[in-house]
Length: 407
Ligand code: GTR
Image (cartoon, protein in one colour):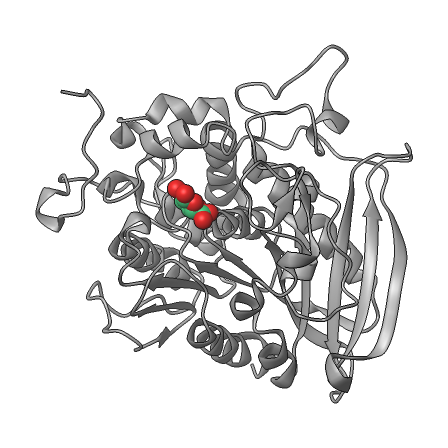
């Protein structure tokens, strides 16, 4: 017999749990006014997620420089203008950089609203466009289309269906992406990526309450936003942040901390993202911290098998987007990510939205497949597995159209 807890895939085995109330402060004070949320409870929740889950960002970099690598106004058959821009985070040669792939639609008046998000396998994986540069990031052994830890031409367009660039551009949005591995390779090693830029003398890894990899990836999204704010062709007040899976967890944490993101979309973010931890359905805090010890801060490991001790749950992470629109997408066969737990977290973020004068989800009854709900909190579940599909993008586009573009 192993002492490993069984993974729960049966609703009847979900333990009874009680969710902490987003509208009660740690000292027991109820939050009855928007001002108390803003000035007391919201900052308190950010601190709790920093200290116990994602880790705090240990400071600011006073260096950031951008370098335009390429610009072409006739990209994707004339549909878009493509820019490739390299962000440098250190004056040192060979210091960490992040390459942004930016497509802006040609047939709308600029500045354009944009979707942004990190990708898993390099910017060249996002479209078939032959001009997109191949990422120079270090990838772990066994990553898709990688040789000697480097991405190859074989990966070009491999994630095109997950990004739907032409569809997004056709609906009048730009698309801005960068590869997460350039910020921090996805392995349990803190000697590379951006972490060392923040170390104190003699420090070799983050302290127990300092950021893991997700914190570093989320930091990168904010640096992308810094760049977008300075680009006159981009409507920086209408940037929708989208992330899938581990990058969905990242999008939620970036959106919680950085209110410049006008809307945040989580696709199949599961455990540590939109799914409630206390349900222990599918992936659990213990399993995620074991398989990916570098994603969260070390303090988070104290909750392995002890989710009920957490001073928060993931509905509170979603509530940190309020009053900005937030959308959660699940897939029926993606049980590892706990679709019901994702829905319930979105539902239980509702009281914060209502306090701020916005509508949450209407009921705790899950909608059927392909019946998107579009209140200020949005949700859909589709058939199929762990992926981002054309249908998902249609829903994201409808949601963002309605909430931040047509409003
Ligand atoms: C899984 C992990 C999930 C999810 C996924 C992904 O292996 O257990 O939490 O994030 O990876 O990022 O694709």
